[in-house]
Length: 119
Image (cartoon, rainbow, N blue to C red; front, side, top):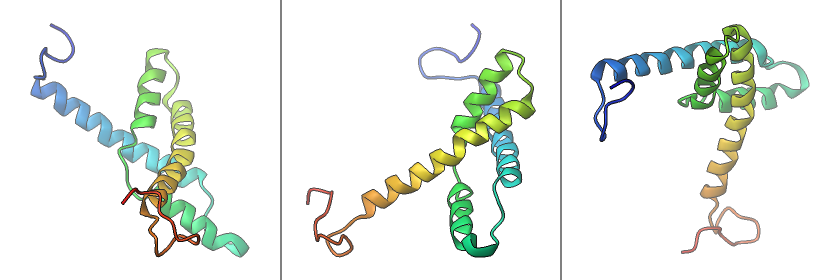
């Protein structure tokens, strides 16, 4: 049987290979993001600093991993796929931050005094 084994079990060697590929993706995507995102300076330094913080706050980088894996199926050079993967990850990180903030709203912090959670 090729691929993952049936019924919820997997070959430990395959799982280890997947783990290594995911770790490598995190490293190369973070490096690419660091290269393409602006550095904090000037009038908007605080905004850029917050943006970089949100992007580098951690994460599995699953979107870029899938981008790189798909690109490899079509012989797309990794350098190009990395830019695409990083381009997908940056706005997704922003969206993740917004989602977290949305769930942190409380009666005390929301200006209208209401909360999205039904308590």
